[in-house]
Length: 113
Length: 114
Image (cartoon, rainbow over all chains, first blue to last red):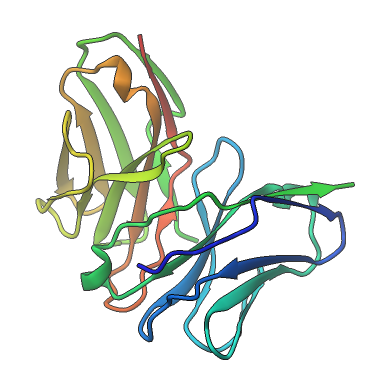
């Protein structure tokens, strides 16, 4: 799986959009970008994933650059409950990846009132 | 919504005890996983299973075994608990998929071995 680079931490104001960047310059053509988050003392939670096109669901939007070397997770209206560590992961097909998730350091997001 | 439940949120055991951690998922997923999470080491895969009675070793299987007698249930067994197995244990499940693989996690069990 390609390596990802994320900022260690960031603060966000409640009610504002939170934009979380991720660099994955060595991503290959069949690798997807996944985002998970982990709220303190809870299990990781899937947020969203994408291959080439931008994606949106009820939790967030994922913007992937045209060259696919970076992406941005957008939480449109951050709430205090969005305070968590956010992990950007790049993974290939089941067979290649061995089906395990490998979390890097992630970005510790603190949403402030 | 997918629901993955784990038998205990917090568990305290003594060295040498046999420990059972249970995980149940309600979405008929084929794949189930056991990870442990430690500060500075991230998430490490212990075992996974892609079908009933099937199991595969992950990165750190030593000191652990697993059981998958039913599709919805995946048990992690510490045959003789040791202090270095004090950790947060996370169970996950996912549907079958060749190119995408979204894993759904339980709340975790924080195990302390004294």
